[in-house]
Length: 383
Ligand code: GLA
Image 1 (cartoon, helix red, strand yellow):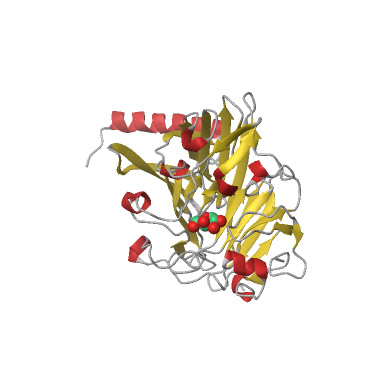
Image 2: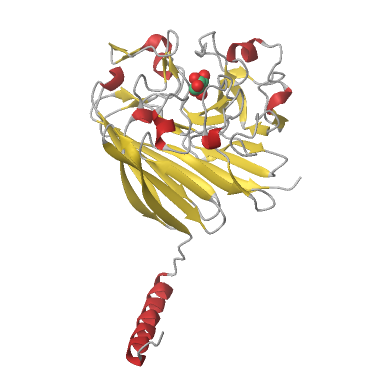
């Protein structure tokens, strides 16, 4: 095709101008965002947002339940796999599943007997886990359609989901406005920023409930993954997985992950807490100061060389080894997710904090802003 000279000159001039503008800002865009329709939730459209960086990583999030649905990341040889359990389409997320990739709230984890007292008033929640309340109730944050917006970061666009939880929803006091922002960084970190405000005193504990398998979602159990957790203590539980209130030293227990240990090494130990959890399903009391973003855990999968590091500013981390997965949920590519096919590292406040004055407070008051950051950082290491 022949291009008229005048046109070519104009294009050249424009591109030179654009070049100058780019030079001035000097912000190379390393992350791109693609938005598509994901299906309908009660007649309303849900979206899927795909973030890609120039380093071989791709993640996807949806405003339905603010789920993290996909984390494609390279192994030590550059082969990319999706390392989070979940579903190929919205239908899977709408169906019954144990919070795969979900944003969990208002109160992630358990509240004993679904009751707590705040300012001398007792609040009653649905008991959806035996006698206890779990993960925000019958219709928690994971089942809400959040509003979505694109927000700029230094590395490119990120996605912010916002939900306004009405006063009294699931039994919790106060109108709570909560947002969760997912950003993908150029250096293969996923950053999750939470923010919340309220118009009346309330309690709050939010987390992300992704199940990881660093060999690839659906590629068998996670027992060979090697884990390090930066915690000298954990919170032992009763038979309903409610903390007893004790902060127990991990020394000489199967809960000592201060040096790297395979998940499977002690998961069937003849030990009271392991038996109560059916494996690991416990809150670790993280070392270091709450409020400071610090390394909480590191997990390595030897066949792929993939490494996941989890950073948080929260006081606790629930290490859950997918003990309740039983093959009844069929996920990506038609794979049934069996027992221990994924592990979760849920950054959090301690379970049942509203009933434990000695645990760090989870009370949010009007005029205060709750903020929290979780980072999932992906690396590779050869053996
Ligand atoms: C959390 C809990 C587990 C289990 C899962 C969901 O991580 O600690 O006991 O309820 O969620 O199945």
